[in-house]
Length: 258
Image 1 (spheres, rainbow, N blue to C red):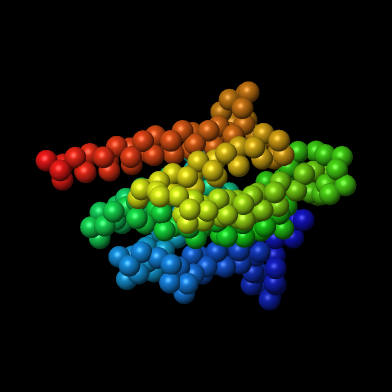
Image 2: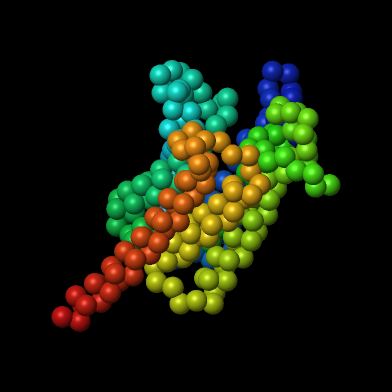
């Protein structure tokens, strides 16, 4: 589970991780338009949003990984920016993506919650695809296990370990997607609330996997893994954002009624 190269042509190496990102971006770029399931106000600017957002989340993911997991690299700028050596943080990419979305929406004079809700509908397959690439690369491995489906990750040791990347691929790529689409189709949500549901559900699912299956790392606190801590913050943020979204809509309605 550690052969990161999918195809080697002379000096040119095509990595599984790169393929996964390419497929994920193509899905996120074209699927909403192809299936005609996107807000009318976003159709003309969706491609620009995704293309510029890709650069943003990669930079944010790298910066987040350095800040959250390898702060020692801050003393070595060239190593810190060496993204080709691996190391991206979902939570760093999320923070960068939220800030980028707010600014993009401001530039185009649209509601940022409208973009966030549409993004939440389509992003889960991307999460699943990238987790599968993590598994192929033999990274983000799980805790030791005696279960028959345990996998040996040679770059770590010879122990059987939970294939936690595949657990995440299923839960973040399929289960989370089902939850989001159920809420979208069955519940009467205010703009922005679908994004809140997405972040809270992702944080909860990832937290369960962090606690039970993924091998923990303790960069910040000794009693809770960094991944679990970030998931807790993410869930709290989604709850706070949901309160803001609800209050904002009430405030706007009261202003219209006055």
